[in-house]
Image 1: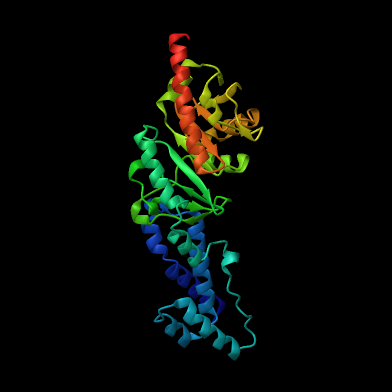
Image 2: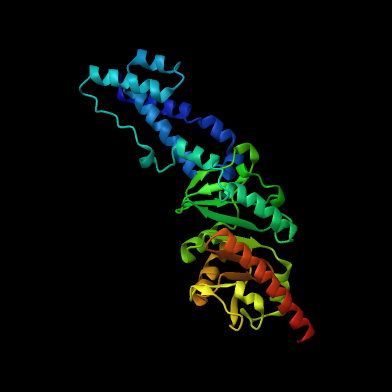
Length: 324
């Protein structure tokens, strides 16, 4: 068989086993539902299968088309082909580590984890609470929790009070997807993800919450400066001072940065990072005319601080309006 024919066969096999036609037909959905890493994995698998075919003779190729498990059955055929020809180099199958993906067993373990702290259960519960408090209405807001070195993220643009455990996205600390919702759910990852990841990397947060709180918006309207100062209130003791590594005393001054809003959430990253470096004590950043990001070492600390901030903001707004 000539080299041209072999190349032609390989390209046809890549097209067939990668599902190229189906992928192209589904592009409008796939570009928003399936990560590049998933497509890369599928393409790499197709290339492996094509290389398997190239190592076989004609009869073996025909047999492979009727095998239920292509890779498993053809690995046996390849062994036979290699034993009959010393000229062919051995084919090395990439390991799961080389592919940089989590094994099916590990994925299933993440899904089946029934721990109370598993974000698959926590995030839907917390979103219901946040919705009831008016913090994530109109599909706004979001939450992300770090659990066993995996990042769980709520989907974007959905009814937060109706989120289900299998609606969540799971990625590693490098931002690479591990588990994504089924394509027929038509879900996309939260637009807040760049800010969430910034909080994880810059502040080693265990959980980050983004709310569209009316109190935050009101406070920023009444406070044109780039920061807000709060003193003399007992609930300040519920806020963690990240620079000192302890909670504030009620006689200390709490200072929070305010950054300007942008058209897209991802465009907030630079000013968000600047605020973190300028205000090393803060555990929250306010976004003018938008809302707030608050984080903590775990979901409990993030949640209680959010509640304390909301309380403090209401009092500060009252004092500003009534000039007291």
